[in-house]
Amino acid sequence: MTDNNLSGKNVVIIGGTAGIGLATAIAASEMGANVWAAGRSETNIEKAKALSDGKFEVRQADTHNANQLHDIFKEAGTIDHLVSAAIGGERTLKPFVEQSEEQFQAAYGKLWGYAKVVREGYSYVSDDGAITLVSGSPARKISPSTSALSCVGGAVENMVRCLAVELTPIRVNVVSPGTISTAMFDHFGDEKEEKLKAATQGHLIKRAGTAEEVAEGLIFVMNNRFVTGTTVEIDGGRILS
Ligand SMILES: NC(=O)c1ccc[n+]([C@@H]2O[C@H](COP(=O)([O-])OP(=O)(O)OC[C@H]3O[C@@H](n4cnc5c(N)ncnc54)[C@H](OP(=O)(O)O)[C@@H]3O)[C@@H](O)[C@H]2O)c1
Image (cartoon, rainbow, N blue to C red; front, side):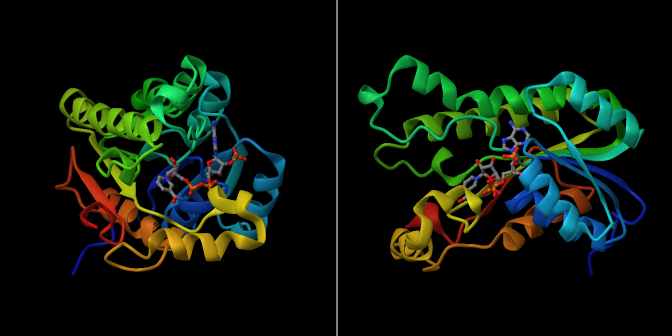
C-alpha cells in the first residue's frame, strides 16, 4: 500500500481555483496537507473558497506575476509541493501556417508562466519536496491544428526533465492529461458534453476524463518519493488511438 506522505505537508497549487488544480487541492487537503490554491479571477476564487469549506487557503495569483507568487510562497514558508496546473497562455488551435507569429507565441504563455512559478518558487521548496507541472497529450499525439499546444506541451515536458536533473534532490514531474471535462471546454456551452463525447470516440477509453482522475496522477507523483523526471499520462489511451 502507498504511504500517505502528504499529511502535514505544505502544498501550493498555482492554477488551483478550478479544474485539475482545484481537484488536486481538494484531494491533497483530504489527505491532511496544508494547501494554498491560487488563480486570477475573483469568480473562480469565490467558487474555490466555497468548495474549500475553509479547509484550505485560496489566494489570487497569476503565473506571470512574481510579486503575487512570492506573497503566497512566503505565507506557506517551506513548501513541500509546488504545483502549477494553470493554463497560463492562449490555446491557439489553427493550422500552423494560418497562425500569426503572435498567436503562436501567445500559446507559450503557459511555458513562461510555469518557468516563472519554478524560478520564483524553487528556493522555498524543501530538499525532500517536489515540483509538479501539467502538460497535455498534444505533446505526443499530433493532430491537425494543434501545433501550438503540441510545441508548448513538449517544451513543458522537456523543461521538467532538465529541472529534475538540475534541481535534484527536489523531484520534478509532469502529468499529461488527455481530453478532460473541465471549464476549459465551457465555450461549447450546452453542446459541451456532446462535443467531448464526439471528440473521445476514437480513444481507447471512449469518454472524457474527470479532473479528479487527473488529480490522482498529480497526487501519485507528489506522494511517491522515488519518482522524478517523469511524465505520467492520464489520457484514456488517447496517444495510442
Ligand atoms: N482539460 C483538458 O482537456 C486538458 C487537456 C490537456 C492539458 N490540460 C492542461 O491542464 C491544466 C489545467 O487545465 P484545466 O482543464 O483544469 O483548466 P480549468 O478548469 O480552466 O482550470 C485552470 C485553472 O488555472 C487558472 N489559471 C489559468 N491561467 C492562469 C494564470 N495565468 N495564472 C494563474 N492561474 C491561472 C484558472 O483560474 P483563472 O482563470 O481564474 O486564473 C483555473 O484555476 C492546464 O495546464 C491545461 O493546459 C487540460
